Length: 361
Image 1 (tube, one colour):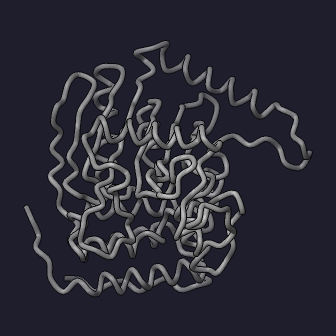
Image 2 (image 1 turned 180 degrees about the horizontal axis):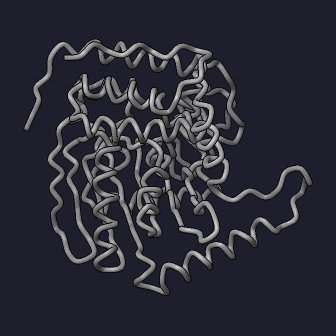
């Protein structure tokens, strides 16, 4: 077993390849195949370089801990079943969600190339990080992509106290003829659970409309929010959006209900049991790839032409800020903040705790 890499220091700017190599080395040490470790590391660094640090390398310690507790399976087989011309199902065998999502999004793209549309439902998976990464995977095939996932319970039904639904993210991507694709990536809640955990760790308050405390009252305390529930987008209608994602992911895959899903930080050896749904659309089966990307470009131009409320803050296209952050990271590296340095050091400690493991075929 090779020695573990040195942890990047707080205050330095680390190159993307350096951070990806660091994460991949720890994941190999934890029992992943080298190709899987690199793929998983690339997804985490993609989020980090996009400015979505709450879904980036901050999750690496939890993933490694899940592997060490055997809550995550480092060597899944990924056998697709119930497959038809445009649809398939995958039992992820409690794999890290990133690996399951990569396999499922690639299969959805392959089905779409044959049938025009491809759909893959996934059960028994883990937390898959940032949903837009898998949309970009399908965009790489010049396809429209949609991604849904349920998550551990954090949202109560309207008027209730007990969390039942997760933040249940939705992501979508549309190729554009004259520039960056339009990428939509949002939780079904006003804030993300990861950002609330980050605020709690830093001793910071959260916006008053993000969450409710255990008594069902609005709170700015991140700690109280973690004991209560998240606020859904759009009030009562937002809880229906959470329900819609739940139904799409769970009813089609046969997976666990959101109320039964465990977060990646769960200290037990019980699996997360997350469910996902991936949809890919091949434009050639509709009006053609050129026509679609041209139309998306027209929509983008219309958005950008809207007069802004503040002259120095032009209307921004979805996904533009993340794309700009990635370009900056490619040029100048990623700043290792104290919080990131702490997470990387914790991840290294988690990897060092692997004294033995069984490697499958």
